[in-house]
Length: 70
Image (cartoon, rainbow, N blue to C red; front, side, top):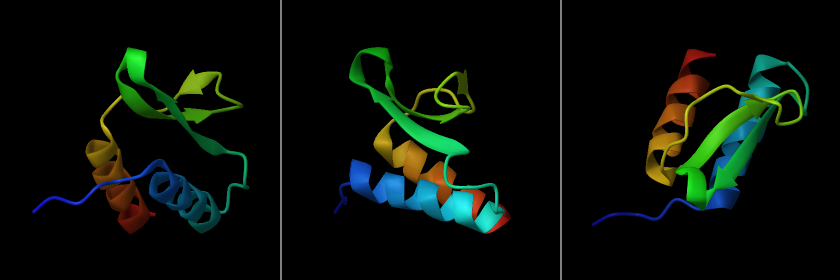
């Protein structure tokens, strides 16, 4: 049985990560582009990629690890 990871769930985790790291609401953002390979975290209004592109499940696991680490 697999569960589906939605964009809304990932955005909530990014918001939690920003709040937990106390860096402000606009520090990290989630970017999605199917033609480029999926999701990535961006910084500074989308100008810099913090992570490489990955699938929704991979991004979910990445954010879980980041939330545990911070």
